[in-house]
Image (cartoon, rainbow, N blue to C red):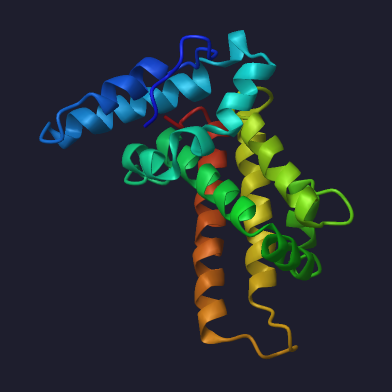
Length: 207
C-alpha cells in the first residue's frame, strides 16, 4: 500500500486500513478480520454525514489507489452476506469492467433480452457500450457513500445477472462453450450473493 499524503481527503475507515497494514503478519487472523470488518462498516456507515465529491471519488477508485490485492487481503475472505463481503464483490465487479470494458459491454448487451427486469434495475444507459458500463459501475460504487445502499447492491446484482446471461451466449448462436458456462455460473453466483445481501440491508441485518 502506498504511503498516504497528508493533503489527500480523509476517508472514513482510513485508520482501520492503516492499522491493518501495520499489523504483524503473524497476528491472530481473527484480529485482522475484526479490523477489516471495522473498516467496511466505517466506509459504508460512516461516510454519509460527510460525503463530498472528493470522498465519493476516493471510494469509487479505492481499488485503483490501494490495489485490488490489498482489498483482497482485507475483504475477500469475508462472508458474502456481510458489509465486507459486499464491498469485495462490488470492487471485483468494477475491476473486471475496467479491465475489459468491451467484453463487459458485449456480454451485457447480449444478456438484455434474457434478463429484461434485471436490465431495467441496473440502469445502464443506451446504448450499453464500454463507456456506459464503466459509468454504471462507478455510479454503483458512488452509492456506497451517497444514496440508498440497498439500491446500490441491487443495481450491482442486476448488472452481474444480465452480464452472466450474456456470457452464456457465444458469437455463434447456440454454441456456448463449457468454459463460458462455467464463467457465467460464477458471475451468476456473485449476482445472487449480492441480491441476498441487498435483502438483508433492507431488513437492517447487513453488518
